[in-house]
Amino acid sequence: MFGALARAGALSSAPSTEAVRRVLAEVAIPELKMMRQDGTQVLLDKELNDGRPVVLNFIYTTCTTICPLSSQEFSLLQEQLGKDREQVHLVSISIDPEQDTPARLREYARQFRAGKDWDHYTSDAAASVKAQIAFGVYRGDKMSHIPVTLMRTAPGNQWVRLDGFATAEQMRAELRGLLARR
Image 1 (cartoon, rainbow, N blue to C red):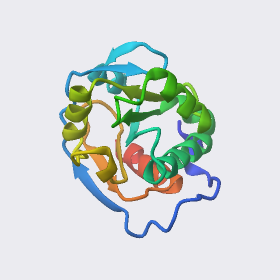
Image 2 (image 1 turned 90 degrees about the vertical axis):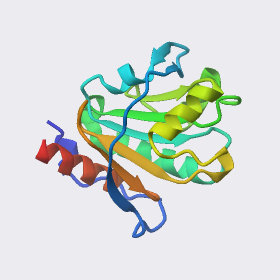
Image 3 (image 1 turned 90 degrees about the horizontal axis):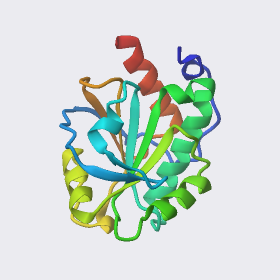
Image 4 (image 1 turned 30 degrees about the vertical axis):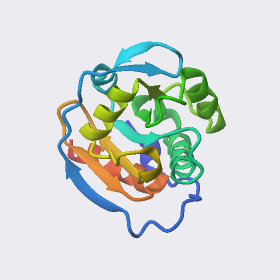
């Protein structure tokens, strides 16, 4: 399992990531109604607790700085996972629910070649803020957001938080390490 995680992958386009900080994080996933890019209404806790490892970030589709770079790294990670990609749930949650409709998220997902195991979610403003607070990324408004990637191997396990621009290689290495300790 996860053979692609052990192989070398494509080079990353991200800037130097020496400043990426790894910390363990306790997250109580709230029961929030979200809308997936396919228009299906779901509960966030159920989506994240499907038994697969989760790699999660927060984005918004009109961002021109952090989000495209983070999404490009998710795209590279998805590619590097190869045949194992369906065993990992990639998750991007919008921090701009007023603009990010399911249709907009579908277009954004297409832009970054998101496969069927990389879901994009939106919600109403209150649920968006609650999700951001639960994962420790809320900064008051979308213009103040910071690059953060969170991952967890299975429901009930602790989350790893990578603060900074995590590359696909760093995410893949982190997943490999987490799975080895499981």
